Amino acid sequence: MRHIVFLLILCNFNAFAQSEILLNALEKIPLKADRFIGIDNYGDLYFIKNRTLFKQTKIETFQFKDFQLGTVGSVDLLNPLKITVFFPDYQTAVILDNKLNEVNRISFAMEPPFLNIKNATTANDNRLWTFNEDNQQLELYNYREKTNQQLSRPLAETYNTHKSNFNFCYLLTDKNLRLFNIYGSLLSSMSAEGIQKMSLSNDKLVALRNNSMVLLSENLSKEESIKMPDLPVKDLYLSDEFLYIYDGEMIHKMKLTQTKK
Image 1 (cartoon, rainbow, N blue to C red):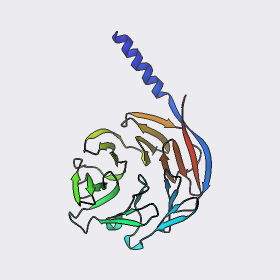
Image 2: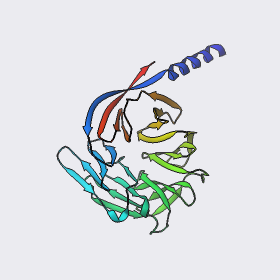
Image 3: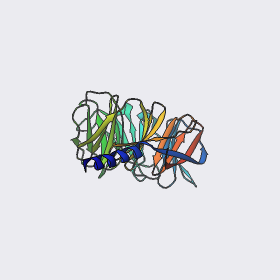
Image 4: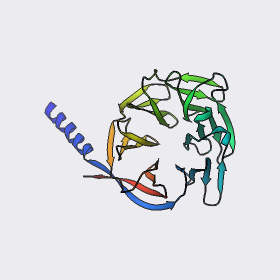
């Protein structure tokens, strides 16, 4: 009986190991921008040009800029009605509505509890996933109540970035990629060697690693290679089964299709 179980496990492993994701090209969207941010669930396009965040819909264009805050560090489109924009130079997160009007401004270093933050992204219930540079910990900050909750243990590694949804956060350092839930539990970890860029959609994470692309899922336990097109990857954005790759001139919209080698 043990031999039969082992054989089934081996067959399943081999089937997984041979799986591959193909990218089927759907369309090209011309774009002249400093950074491509992404395309939200409504099909609206976001990009940064001349230190200004733009949202381009089918009928109009909105913009947000505040040059006094310096360069935009990150833009989180998880909730298109509450977009989180983080400015690392002044330790400030700005929450925007769907027309890029400012709704909230959180100055972490200037308001109690006076935090030194590397990045901030959208969580649930008026909270933000943040990484505290002083104690090297992942935290949750409630900007309504102005309370802070430490989640991870201090990390003796160099922070690179993090990607999140409402309940989970993928934290990337120079050594490891870790997955935490909203309660601070470390669910899994893997080597971060060679990871250059990441994009998260639901529970799937696309990573550009050593100029190759992989799809990570099932709490980082499943990894599938993606057959990359022959084009440079300046920025990338994952939305459900669609992957957007910006080469500096065009946004390439592609559909993820699983196949077998």
